[in-house]
Image 1 (cartoon, rainbow, N blue to C red):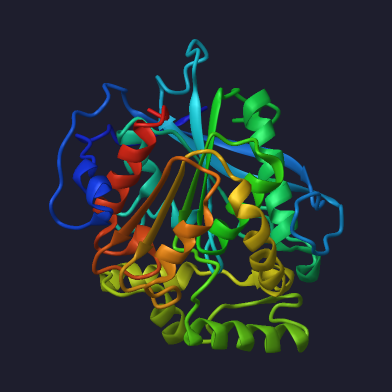
Image 2: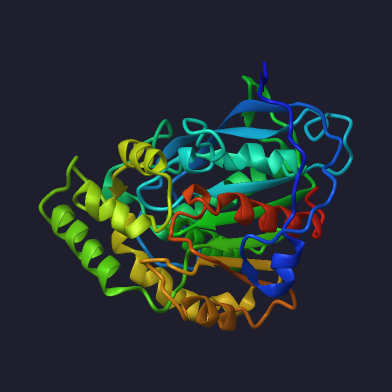
Length: 356
């Protein structure tokens, strides 16, 4: 049975922000869709940890389960709807589906906010995280994560998954969003399989990573070489202070504290395959032709300016590329104080492209 959540509040879309390519306090408003109460369905996808993506890296080709939730309104999930649309959200290193479903502190639930705008979301724990299956850490990698995202996208189109222990719904339009390393995975899925209708890359850039994050990734690599902690896995940021310095710029202390408490360790193979993904991106991102939204915080400690401008310049194959700088904001876009403005801008962009 679906889990009912709070009724949607009036939606506020940052249309002015999209025009200015910068998100700040000034917002234009539009009416919210009359969509009914927000509901949540538990979903499970059976996947193979294979790698048929363009990013070369190692995986074990074993079978695993991906668990998550579909969040939207009863109308959006109606079996009678002829044009259902959904966005698959992929979290980055150190997170899980809680990045998109941060109910523990009011006002930071991305999936609920998207639903209030009429945008349905699939939020999951990626392979190796949370309640999804955990492979040997060196048998996961960015290319295999992209392949798994592709399998989930195809299952969303066909209904080939379980929803509340029953057959899943099929969706006509499927968008793909990724935060941080999830953005790298989303890009790889998009250029490897060309099966999504829109791409959103949040807080990720292939060029311009800061010395701080390179150092922290190096420290995670040392942990991995030593066997991992736990075996095959390592944290990004060896202390909570290091993690918070990477992720936050202007966040509520309670949000920082809870996000740090909930943070996850990462498969060592994901970390070690990031360079291969970046190399492949330089050759393949230009083949992406669907609408693309890029967003990075102006105070991102991992990808400081001009990383966003460089990333936008890579998407030469799409005629519809929007780049947004979120002012006074760090890496964890959905958890900073500016999160409402970011959500408004993203929802407005998606609604303009047929996802509402």
